[in-house]
Amino acid sequence: MSVISPPELSPPPQCPDPAAAAPRNRSFLLTWMLSLLAGFLGADRFFTGRWVTGVLKLISLGGFGIWWIADLVIVMAGGLRVGRAPLRGYEAGKEIAWITTGFLIIIGYSLQIDDRIVALLTQLF
Image 1 (cartoon, rainbow, N blue to C red):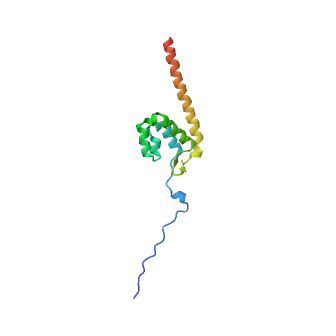
Image 2: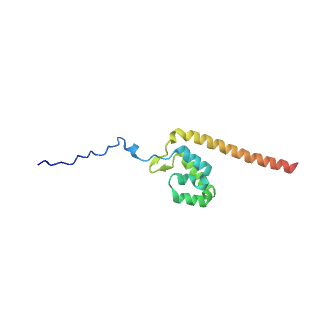
Image 3: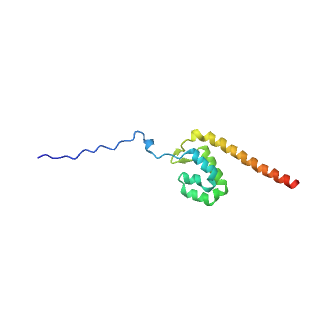
């Protein structure tokens, strides 16, 4: 009488790099753009998985602008992390973010000054 033995199961393949098995981190450039353009609506918080503070930021319109600016600086300085890991692509994109944000601040400020000059001139003439 012959006994049939069950086939041996091979162990599941192991991932050689544990970091590769972890979920991908959030993109720095996308987080920065969300923080810059829609941060007053909490878009950066929602994107990074911070739902409760995202709703609070949405309701308060970015903490009346203060929370929005604070979060933008934190993102650009590399202080925002997902888990314990920094945002993906921070080192490559931080210079672009700082230069572009500074440029946009200068443009916004100059447009505001232009409007004031035009309003003053129209009142005088």
